[in-house]
Image (cartoon, rainbow, N blue to C red; front, side):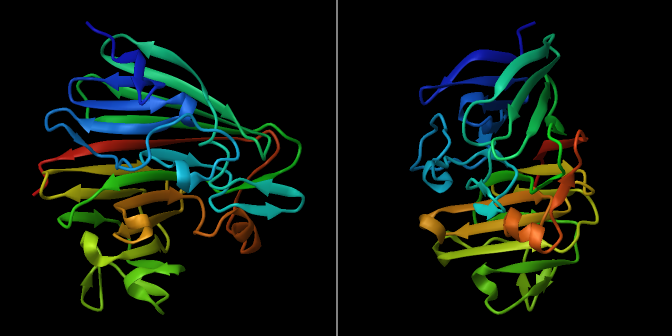
Length: 312
């Protein structure tokens, strides 16, 4: 039986890893911050991750401006989102993990199940991030196991975000297990002046539906407390979708960053399970919502990305 992992995969000149079973394909690029570029449903050929049409995949490096090299896909942001300063420490735009290479190895591949192990040390904080990505030959799931370790001698406050970009059309739909959303004032989109929105409908607006690309909007919302650990974006015109499942005790809120012809003229939606509300590490420390890892502490958690079929 053929291996699931192809370690000779190259895309846009960047070497990577391709994990391909009978039903899905996922590509990971350790030299580009362990970015996941593709999550493809093989039966339809649909890629469930958005790719920036104007920015190619490149090896990443410390000091790059995230927005200018962001080619889409799935990134991990840690220990901040927004760049900031805390005490005498400076935190890079969108954190440490997306810029620069990760170490990796194929831990298992018997033709039925494959697991790739990746790890990366933090730059601004004395932490080690490890993750295992597992794909089954006949499955529609990509399973993630994470281990975050504080190697230092002081507590480490942090923000950790799963930054997943979805391609959308006007027939795409968002599903969340919540009763309300909060509006981030710097990018309110349709909700200028509002602080909180009822889910799934607010003042006659169906929040599950996405505006069209000619709306010219950018809006940033986040869940006000997560009852269950999942979010889902489905596409009625393509019959498929992507569901993310995660631990709500770790990722305590989910951000929705909707770009509907607004920011740089793009059309996409980000779902971002996160440990804190939007604002970056300095803001989260100030309002007491930053997560904290004690000296020597290890945090283990899991997440699953599932391709949803049969969407009507």
